[in-house]
Image 1 (cartoon, rainbow, N blue to C red):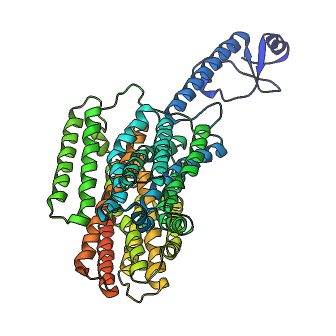
Image 2 (cartoon, rainbow, N blue to C red):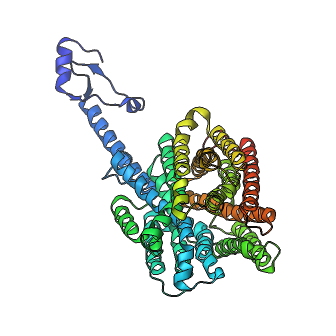
Image 3 (cartoon, rainbow, N blue to C red):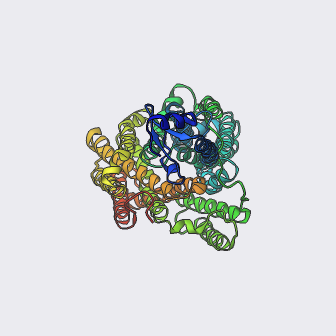
Length: 542
């Protein structure tokens, strides 16, 4: 169309002016005649009507897409979760608070065990079950909890797990008989197994893939690591100032507060609404993992060669083998085996298992060295590890900043090598060692390195999976870390005991702890080599 003089005026009577907006894609698909005006473009009446219909269709399509995305990743369009930084961070804080409680309760009872024994008349075996009941239930049910979050809703499973965890804390804190406390701890572990996978699944669903999600995972890792590290300090404070019961009862007000925040800030998300829970697979994997965890914790009291250890270990391996066979034939498996063909998922989980086997033991051996050799009290030992706790938080928050420029694999490997250097330093400890050289210095290296590695591995594992498997992958990475930690602590405790040969003098204990640290360093070095060879360069490379 050629505009000019009266022709343009006559034509203008049949035209509608429109605001300038991105319609280039529509222009490529239709025959619009455009003419310049003082305000932009003009269209003929018929063309404008066509344009209006197309714009309305595009808007409807966009709304449908937005609704679909909301249902998939838990974004509420009316509140603008993805676009509202305050709300997004409220979701992250809520998820991280749940993870903090879960990890805290793995170690918070340690310093309160003598008081529990005196008050409830627990035997040595019963006292061990205060720790083991939580760990076995936690490890055994975690994969089931992760898949349940995908199927039934991540918010629902978060609220359910936290409610069970909080009520069990009440029961444990008010226990009057020796059997009641281990029973409450087992129920606590069940609640934690449902809660923990939901925390990471909610976080990865609320934050889009990329640098923002990696930073959020770094926060989640840092908070979880801080919970494990803070257990000794918080337990010591509560036991000294109040009572052993408060190491459990403290979960109640915190749990209620987090429940309220979750009810307000979290939006429901599920991705497999048409799928059913694979009950045979769920029973097999839960029983298998629980049997393995039971066998591992038996090693401390019975040794590796005892029937009470070998039978559950063999049974656990058999049950997990049957689980793999069932999943290979299932139409709708609990854990699609094809997930392990994703390089990021399989490599990151294996590396997490290996590195976790050494990292869990660090806190234990640092604590017992400070108390049994250097003569620190429970509260002093907890305070001594605060800088190490802060360093793992630092490493976890530093990793997302380094990954875009250095590469995820390089960050994970460098973090592991940094931890290896710390293990080497720590293995040089002596009975008369100073705080600076025997605890603070090596602790800072180990924990910063493990923070770098842990965050990177969690980001790789969750980034390499489909959105529909977010809860399952979250449960898998948590299971890898927990089972690796349980196995590593059992093995390294055996290694330390083999050197001390029953001796209890400071020199004998120090020699045992030093050998455990050297062995742990070798394990993490093997993990670094594994990561250098197997991990993908990016977040989802297969």
